[in-house]
Amino acid sequence: MPRPLARVRRHAASCRTVVAAVVTALALHGSALHSKTLAAQAPASNAERYAVIPRPGVLTPKTGAFTLTRTTVIHAPAAFRAVAHRFARDVANPTGFDLTVRTAEAPATTGIVLRKDATLPEEAYTLDVTPAAIVVRASAPAGAFYGLETVKQLLPADIFRDAPLPGITWTAPAVHIEDTPRFSWRGAHLDVSRHFMPKEFVKKYIDLLARHKLNRFHWHLTEDQGWRIEIKKYPRLTEVGSCREQTLVGPYVSDPAKRVFDGKRHCGFYTQDDVREVVAYAAARMVTVVPEIEMPGHAQAAVFAYPQLSSKPDSTPGVMQVWGVSPFILNPSDESVAFMQDVLREVLTLFPSPWIHIGGDEAIKDQWKASPQIQARIKALGLKDEHEMQSWFIRQMDTFLTKQGRRLIGWDEILEGGLAENATVMSWRGMEGGIAAAKAGHDVVMAPGSHTYFDHYQSRDKSKEPLAIGGFTPIDSAYAFEPVPASLTAAEAKHILGAQAQVWTEYIPNAKQVEYMAFPRLSALAEGLWSAKTRKDFPDFMARMQTHLKRLEALDVNFRKLDKPVP
Ligand code: ACM
Image (cartoon, rainbow, N blue to C red; front, side, top):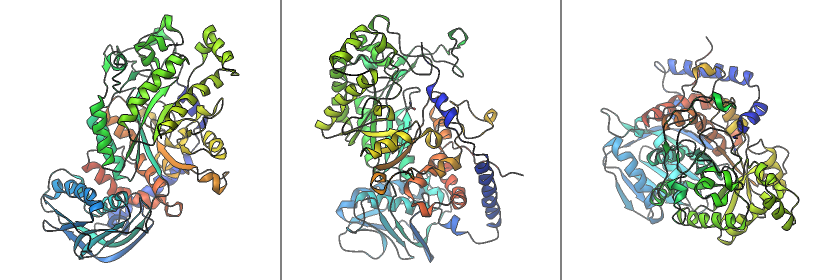
């Protein structure tokens, strides 16, 4: 029997009362609107002229502006050529300009000039816009790419459209910017297993990440409700594991007799060529794709495809049709270890990511407890209980991935029963798992439900929102999130790589609803992950959002409208 939603139960406990914060947010939003009304008469405010999100470390307004024309030349050293061409391609449609890219090691003084500056960190850049030139300095392509993303945000929002509109002058206001990210892991996750998301949308999502200077896409590819990545050695994973016969309609109900289903098959998976395409698309935008292959839990689709992997092989059900967590988990046998390592071997050929996510969360141990064969295995391996059994299983993957030069990452349940030697922990049940891991010298990505689960409601008034899994995470909570717990020493805090948003799709049936749940909260989280703590300022962010929402409109993002001010 599937369980009720564990995430809902945990969220109910972790959701904080943020009424006061919301009232403040609404009041602040009111002042932003007020300044916009005034803008009709007054010159644009700096928040409008320099509406850069995430907010740069140093931004000094200057006088004048640079105008992009069809004769503007982009000068780039060889190392930044690809980045320069990417920019030229991105602006070609909205401007109608076919900009020339010249490889130039010698410094040019007009046009758009990319310069190498070895003193800067890899993702950092400086940007000087004057009437004569736009100069971006960086040590590596990532920094040059982010500098040019900032340039796009200084241009009119229509730069994010796909065809030229009449009458636009493409000016960027003069400015001096120095910018570097606070965290190296600035991510967003997407569950494509509960509801399959087409490849073209996955690319759009990655593109939106890159425009927010986010650099990790966590692709949740396997689940109880569907296996979504082609594995050549085990074709049944997608032949039968990628389809469920029907899907629960409405909220989860524990009484099977009361459940209503849509009667429609739900299918979908990515071929290995599709995966290569997505990974290359992401790499061109400085985004590392971190694949997640769930084990030993969330594996009902896998054990349906290959019942020999099951902890209860005599009664394996089909691909799961309701939400919740399935008790059908992998048998921790040598055969399952070999099978999952085979799967990972193919995954490694597709994903250059240093990190490979093996899930590890919510593995219900009932079948392990009930199986004499698994109990005998626990004893034979000298393990104390089912938690140590799970740790043993995860350790087999850790050793395997480490030998291949990669790093295992898993949800914080991998701490239970002992953490594998080289594991990185993704802390979702609050910050505690991350704190314990950092204190033990392991790297951590913070992903607590309270601030980063964007499948939660964005409003207390649920009647006006699409059905969601529960919880309440408004934009100001996402903005306020601080990934580094105060209880850590400076040395321990270095293990906090950063944080990421989670978009679980039980109640998110299509791409437009993903956009609605992700934005604008992801814009808020992106600022918290990129900008220095001292640069975070919610009223200023909300003022810049007025312009940023125009960009999201141009990009056809179905973002949730900001709440109206209190009348
Ligand atoms: C999770 O939400 N089960 C990681």
